[in-house]
Length: 621
Image (cartoon, rainbow, N blue to C red; front, side, top):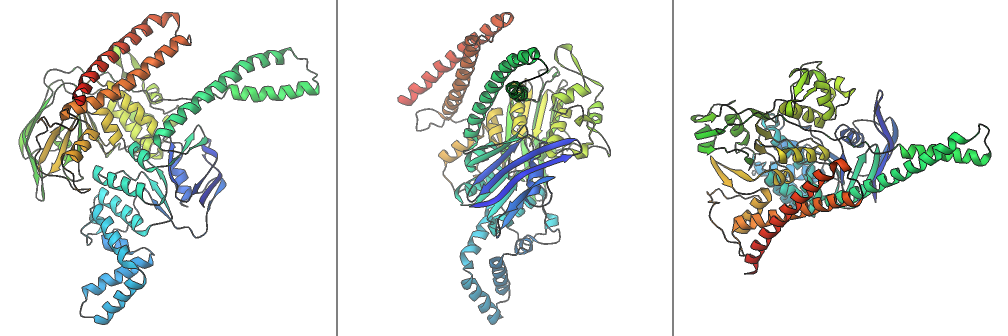
């Protein structure tokens, strides 16, 4: 059953065309992810679907009687209402019955009121509904229902907006970055909820684990065309690669034909026969196809990192307490060269406070933070960029200079740097307030890296970035030679980037776990089975050699899993280079360098395989 149809819509702002002639449909029980680069119109299309914007051409048709709800990135809650009042403010009849019953319970002396409310609960089958909605509130940690909206944090408001939507169970749910401002525990619960429920979803999200486990279809807006993939994120990646290869082969074929037809056109007399006229028309079609090669604009990140001395950063018995909670309790740690640490923990356990103490923007109650003389910190915060009124994109970068130093003594102009971050000449003179959320984050990232830090701190860097930019950022960070400290709810990102974790348990407990997020989850699940959302607060000695059922210690099991991934990557790289040689794509001047690259890959692959056999022999024992 079709719920909603998007028919040939387009949108332009002056000469800038966001998208043109876009069409797709949403059917019952589909769980669709909508993917597009930042600034290409994702949010605009969602606003059109929900009625807060209109297309220049085309139409959006919602099936009659369909109840649609929209979870936007900006909450639409009323500040003076409590959490409970916000939930009951909807038009849901069953909720109104439950509200009346709750009020009757507060006045037990009015037996007639209570009996009427009790009977209505029976008539509307509201008992199960009440249980479900209380479970949702519990899972989303909204226990104090008397709290007013104006006193809630950003994360609490997001959870309340999400709770209201889930409780009302709409036919069609539209979600714009649903995992932003949720901690990892809640993201995993929401992921599980959506995967199991028969619910129709249309969402924009950068969370690739979420895409993988929840969505059964992906719609991509790419170079102003819509492509649909009937599968999850892995399937999408595979089929997109095949599509691009096929498109490029088709363009190459058209280019070869175009050269021949162009020669024919030049030989023809001005007076043409009907047959010649037909071939002439075909020529222009071939020309259009030949000139249609994809514009693969990719963010280019480069850094001229400051030299790092032997002294990095040392935290000595740092304590920080607030009246209602303890953040750090005599925490000590000495950072080493090249460390890549992820920080995880529930919202409110003090992750951002820890970063502020580390960067000396907030003083500790006791203890000290010693920063090495050569350390230059780059701090990417959740607050983002704060432009002055009327400031243009290029003005932001020019504050750091007209020319910016790169590696090996090279320099680049402010305009050229912005082009590397996908801000073309025209976009550079746009007002900053006109940028999309993702474009703002990309510009902010540019301002942090432009300062050439050797200790990089990233607080939720993946929020609002498109998947293309995320992949580039990950590749950059994998090669980043300095120290890296990351707070992120993006599990895919954390798995790829970090080597170990600081686990914030609350009440000043911080544990050092030797592995990435998936390693941590596997350990937690295998070491002590527990109810969803419950986390042990006891101190764990991760350094102990915990032997798994495979015969490997925990660290060996972690290494074994990592090696398997690395072997796959190396095999892919080896096959790619060999294919370049086989296809004759390696020019004479690059043969030696390419051969050396291949040799290094082969040597690394042999070393990894040898270690894999060592570990696998233990499993067999």
